[in-house]
Image 1 (tube, rainbow, N blue to C red):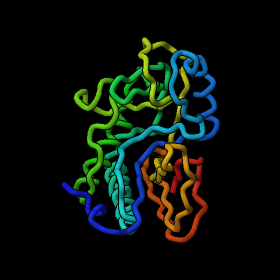
Image 2 (image 1 turned 90 degrees about the vertical axis):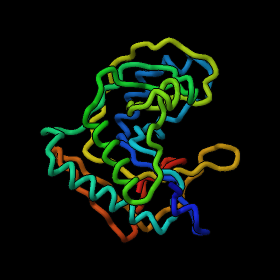
Image 3 (image 1 turned 90 degrees about the horizontal axis):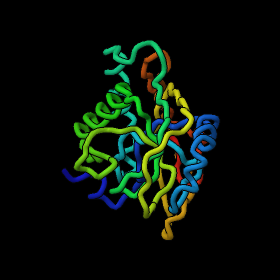
Length: 231
């Protein structure tokens, strides 16, 4: 399936849905994984950019951003009605640092799987396909796409040339009451580039296990971390 966005000459956004942590959560993981920064070479990811990608959507025409917000609304309503998330926030406990060979990254992972995070990722992929988008259906994995399945992870470093054995770190609990649509832009020399502000903004609330989508079509200052903009 060809992404309709790529058949136009409109400005494109490179976007993905993600669990976006608070500053305190990012700082806690950075401190816990500090020893990993000396374990191998590579290009460290600034703590300000730490996140958990739920699904990478790809390049999308700006005029289709509203369609993405509607995808999120549909997923929010479906999960709210199903009641499959229990009574608390979505939680991930990162307690291991691994090397993933195919993408050549060093990342923090959770030894205890999150059924809630996996369900959210799969629901977004299904709805994106139905809406005519072409998301990455398999995403990153330790040995490449052939492994399949959704594994929540936080990338700590990219372009890591030499593998390391997985090792434990002090567990860091991340709790989420929302998920976000994120715009990522990189400049020609692969350095983070600040994304421009958008007149569209959305944040999907997960509080009390209820996915409530709040879509604002008036200007709101998005959070920009130097390489990503959270709408």
